[in-house]
Image (cartoon, rainbow, N blue to C red; front, side, top):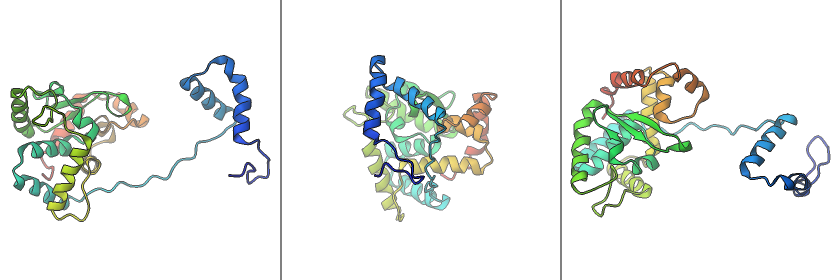
Length: 241
């Protein structure tokens, strides 16, 4: 890549400039966080903006596809698979969060699951509908009887893997005759998009999605979790599974 920008101003090669800056910074014994702050302020001093990458809309399955998909899951009569897929449907959690969820992080009385150290190393609480409580509770009782730790474990007391969950979802998508695979992320987008279509405010969706939107966080700071749970409960009975 050329070191001469389109304006015609000649620039010092990037490696050489880095070596020059290193001579000034070496006595500071900088670590990564320090350098990150230095270059953030340097961008401000030089009025350099970070170019934004174009955003692509996620692929979201249709309601008809999701009905067909879940009907296939139901007909398979594989109870653990059904509970796992319904948990993904209802909570919109990321697959990495799902497989790391422990039994003691599920609050059946409040119909909530605590996500510990989710994306961005942050904790949050996600809801599930009251109608799902009995099914999930029975699943948990069976696991506790086997001495399990995690919400989804194999018979060898080993928690499910990210890859294993994805393969499961792909298997049901194929059995349902869908033209494309169904990923955990698509189920997540389906729930969040569906909630938005029901008129749920972004500020109420945000804590469940785990998106660190500053605007949503500022609005949500004026609301309580019980408000969000009430909004969720008011529409989830219409969820198409």
